[in-house]
Length: 313
Image (tube, rainbow, N blue to C red):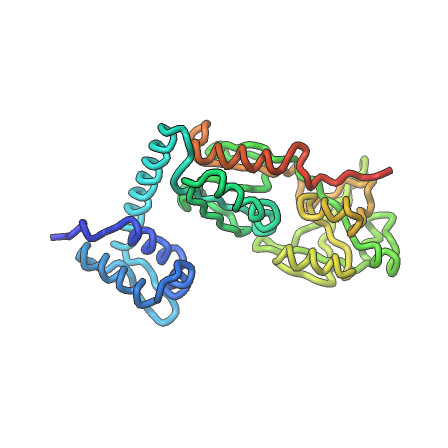
């Protein structure tokens, strides 16, 4: 007979992390555990459930059919426990329990990370989990409570609050401009040193519009990377021109460390208007935890947000 009393919320959380990552050592490192301790957790789960949950080999661990079934059950149980904690917190009139936030790497590092300490101190009962990546996240499958995303809000299953409309700028340092000159048209960029981002969806195309003039091209990059922070550092070191959104370069433009180029053109790297949103799954009205974090971050960002570039005449 299965001994379900041996199964704890902690063991379910660890098992789900193993299924998600496919690597015992990485999960052990992330959780601050010895790999042997994590293996014992899995063994105890398998003994309690009287079934094999994982296939193990030298490179990865993969959930068995039974493992997938129990993983889905564990997700549901942990979500129900989290919902119960949220409901209890809301009855007390204060946020508490876990909130899982996901944001793009660069935005999270620069605009959320510096505010996590204050958020945690202000709401001591909150348990904040901040995950940063640039991949597509399904919040229903991933158990994410709040996503920061650059999007045009089309998914009817997600609701959200607008942070700000995103504006892109072509930028370079004053030193670069003194050395190589400033372009007078988008076509001039073909002769300049360009720094470009290439993610999992491919190389970002650059677009410039002014009236009926619409010029789009794939930059022949002098430096190409899937890391926005690396590209920004290269631009600040006079390596070339960069097309980035205002939340990445606005403060540098306002301080004069970077210069906006081709300001008479509307620049972008995707068709259509893009905005920064805080999105949440579920019903139209967010939970107290989610609402609290949204309100805190929006107040911290300001309106207009503090990174907005203000061009001087």
